[in-house]
Amino acid sequence: MTAASSTPRWTRYVAIGDSFSEGLWDPYPHADGTPAPIGTESDAVQRGWTDRLADSLAARTEDLEYANLAIRGRKMRQIIAEQLPVALEMEPDLVSLVGGGNDILRPQADIDAISADLEDAVARIRATGADVLMGTGFKAGGALKATNGRVGRYNANVWSIARRQGAFVLDTWGMRSLFDLRLWSDDRIHLTDEGHRRIAQAALVGLGLEPDDATFDEPLPAAAALALRERARASTQWTRVHVVPWVQRRLRGTSSGDGRTPKWPAAEAWPPSQR
Image (cartoon, rainbow, N blue to C red; front, side):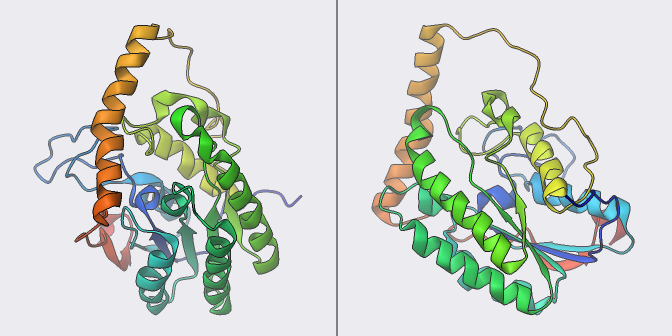
């Protein structure tokens, strides 16, 4: 096994994908400096693991440029059709392409077709000479546990694509700390700020770099278990606030990302204070 390096070789990083790469729900403060709520929906610009990864890369190299084209709700073919051409026009030397979650949530998802689209996109990026960071899906619990079979099959394909195309993999499936619900937002699909921080560290490892924090996957301190009544109340609220609106959007053929534009649409000096 190759020893991890502390120095990245990339100078222009572009992230494409869905809500995971957009950074839900890990917000920056509002424009007036007031804090935005963490781990729940807000209209603040979201930070997320890709911004945090860019922070770490920028701290280790000079003149890093970064763009983030990811938009919540996007499925794999939308990511490839809408975001990939724009990303390639920026001539990046590193692209993170992490998606498929919105496809896999649907029981009828064709995992092999999604994976084939992913491999075609990875091959296009690699043909430019750029490196690619893909990501596995999460191992879910609770009501989403039924997706684990589809996610596991997709993950196997991701590792095979990485071997064939010479790409890197962010292994979220293998992160033990993510089994703790305290790292997940109130919608149980997106992460909190601490969850995104840990993912960014795992991304460094996936890229063959030393993490900033070697203990990033250590579990949180033990917490008192919720009473059965509290768990039932929380599940009822989750269904009403998050599941029902999701189903309604599916029935209407709409997406949470409709009308949204990328948060960082151009590759510019990172961190923003250097702009």
